[in-house]
Image (cartoon, rainbow, N blue to C red):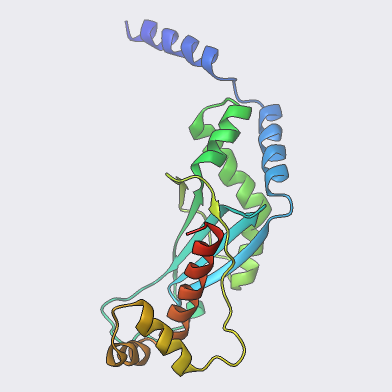
Length: 213
C-alpha cells in the first residue's frame, strides 16, 4: 500500500510540475537576471548589529537582505563596531508578487525555486555584499517570501546640508512621544541615535508622499 501511494503521488507531482532539469535551472537564472537587471542596491545601516541591503528597480523594492551581528544584551555599554562582532544571520525577503510571477512563468516546486533563488543569489550578489562589509563569513541562513507585494522604493536618506542637532531634535519632538530629556538620554546611550531617528522620519515622509498619503 505504501508503494502504491508513493507511485500515485509521484504521478500527480509529475503532472503538476515540470521535472527539474539543467535547462529549467538556466531559465530560472535568466528570469532572475532579467528581473534584476539595472537594479540599484542601497545599504542602510540600522546599528552596529544590523545592516540592510535593499534592491530597487522601476520604483519598487524587489528584494532585501538583512544581516544581523552579535548583540550581547548582557553588556549595557557594548560599543563594538560591526567588524568586531561575529556574524549572526542573513535573511532574504522576496515580495509575494515577484515570487508568484516566477512560479507562474516557470511552474516548478516552490521549494525548488527557493533553492535556485538562493544559489543564484550566492553566484550573483553574495560576493559583492561580502566585499562591501569587508568580511567573508556572511551567508544566507533564511529565505522568506514576504506576505506583502513589492512596495514603493525609497532610498535611505542623508542629512541635508546645514541641519543642526537642534533641528533634528525638534523634528523628533514633533513626530514622536519622546521628550527632550529622553532624546538626549537615547543619544548618550546610543551615539548617533538622534541622526538615525531623524533620517528615518525623513524617509517615512517620502514614503507617504510617494504613496499619496
